[in-house]
Image (cartoon, rainbow, N blue to C red; front, side, top):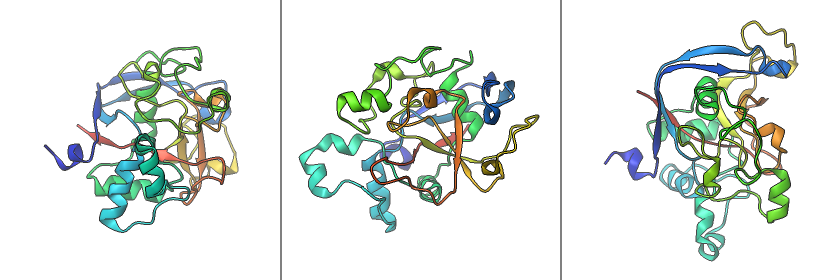
Length: 236
């Protein structure tokens, strides 16, 4: 068993081929186009509190803001299986390097979410609050993040979990306009890194597979509103 498997990473292999990326509905996501992508592997679930705690203990890296205390983890053992949040892009990259992995590219992340058929959400073209945790049902359920095995119906066509809602996720890329775009937002100057997938603090339109936004790589979120998580990938 590899060191990665010992650390709890379960990978989904995404076959190579073409897929529909982007959306003409929103400037920063345009133009919609067909992308060819080689095969790759991506974490079935976001990196968890337990996985990140192992990393922090081995490396001495400071834990993120609002990280569960030992007492909280003892009181609620399932909390260790929530996705880690409030990590910076630098934190996420450091974890991936420590694990012998990398962050997914934007193209890989969107392919994992939208499948080969270009679906709007991981499970299809209509939002379903029974399949993801976003602002409206988070309030109703009285939760923020949820364990990575929760909402099993929210898996993508390839079986990847929580690509919509729960925590937004860092990917490798700098935020730049797509080739052929006329978008001129200052945030898309390349200084920011890309975040994907929406979160429990966002409404469902931000859970679309094509949604992208940027934040400075030092960004860790806000008090009371959570912050970014991530998952890892590897080439095959």
